[in-house]
Amino acid sequence: MRGVVLFSAGEECQGCRLTRRCMDAAGIPYRDIDLTDPANARYLVYVTRVLGHVRAPVVVVDDDHHWSGFRPDLISELHASGTGMSR
Figure 1 (cartoon, rainbow, N blue to C red):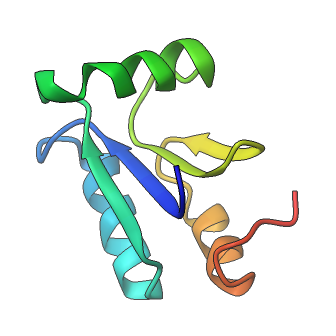
Figure 2: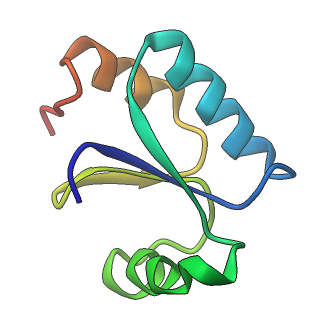
């Protein structure tokens, strides 16, 4: 996967909405993949089994930089680094 990907749990997910809003406000481009859509089942396996996350949203910057939950601190770091992460 290239670029920042937001794995969300549909429109009813509060953390997902807040993450979208914060990333949009920061001007961070991202691809949004709804994990509640059966067509995206392979991504659910990736997020849970490969990355080990159990709650949405999950933001993936690259193989080494990803997190779950609404994390405005990490979104700010991502914005400051120009969509790259230092950790």
